[in-house]
Length: 131
Image (tube, rainbow, N blue to C red):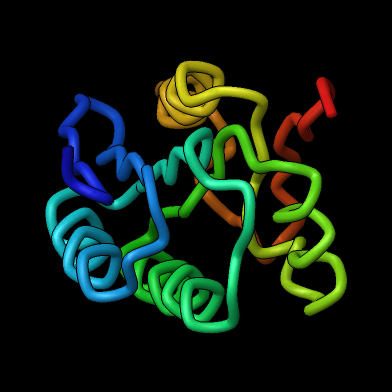
C-alpha cells in the first residue's frame, strides 16, 4: 500500500494519508489541487504531524484558495489538532470527524443559492466533535 492515495470525487479530490511521506504527499496534494478546487485530506491513518507535512498542508491551502477552493482535514488525531493550534494554523482548515462528513459539507456549500466559498470571510465548518 502506498503512503498516500489520491481519490477523485465529484465535489473534491480526497488525499488519503496512511503515512507521512513528504514526497508522496507533496505530489498528491499538488495533483489534488490541480484537479479540483476543493481537497479533503483524510488523516485517519496519521497520528502525528511534523513541520514538513504541516508546511505542505499550508501550501495546498494557499493554492486551493487561489482557485476558489478549500482544503478540509478529516479525522485528525488529538495530536494533529494540538499541532494546528500550537502553530496557529487551525483556522485555515475546516475540520471534520470523517471524510464523508467533509464531502457532504462541501457538496452543500457548492449548492446553488449558498453563500459560496469565502473562508477568509468567516465560513463556518462543523468542527471535529468526536475527539
